[in-house]
Amino acid sequence: MPGPMNKHASVLVSALLCFALTGCSPYEEHEAKVTTRMIERLQDQKAYRVTGVVMKPGDYPVDGSKEIKVSQAIAQAGGFAQFANKRRIILRRGTGNYMQRLFVSLDKKRPVMTLTPDPAIRAGDVIIVEEIILTF
Image 1: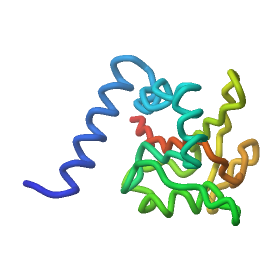
Image 2: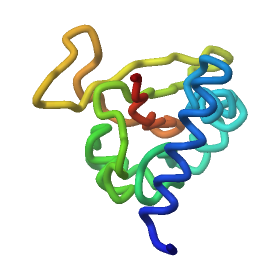
Image 3: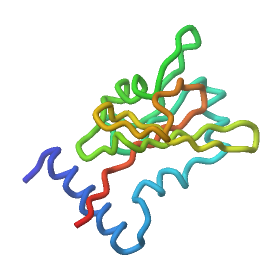
Image 4: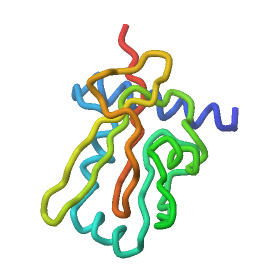
């Protein structure tokens, strides 16, 4: 049966297999691909990247005249796809040779107080939306 539901179902199955077999988050793969070189390239292009469980992952321009938050960046990327984890979004940010890792929660119904609520985006930022991990 073709269609977007099949695509999401196959992503969920592969994510569950990855977690069951290795104990890792399937989106550690996205995070592992974030390098200081990638962040520098995005900074030079005055852009940020949204990846993971969103409708239109990709690079988006940063408008220096107005502030954009993580939630707005995800909306610009088409919003959350099915099975997106709104409670734990990773924001990778580089400063020189150092890379910062922030955890963001955008779940308004059940906020996680220890996570950053909705920080502003800078050129070079990489937003990784993880998938909800189902445990039985």
